[in-house]
Length: 67
Image (cartoon, rainbow, N blue to C red; front, side, top):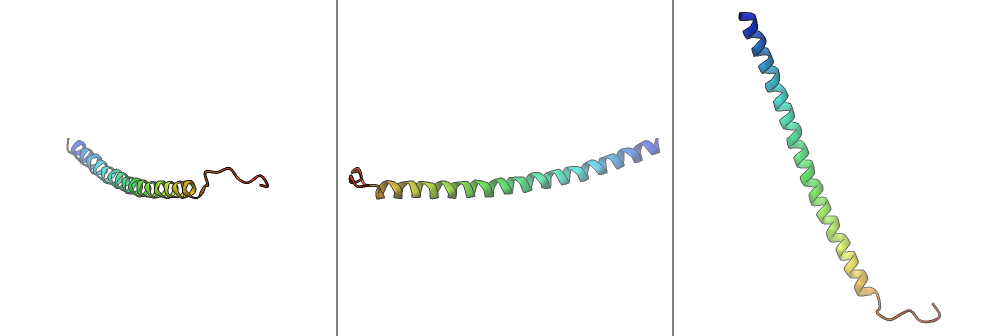
């Protein structure tokens, strides 16, 4: 009986350790996802700015015939 209790305690200890490791992995991944979301928003803003600047700089008239 005592051996079974010791075995259960060892398993519980291992599971606690594994749970802590998995929690750290999930936390790290969430931080990485958050950073990637910020970078994506920044890129979207840059593309939108470039698109807007291109639309402003493009003349509405067709190019001259010698082009």
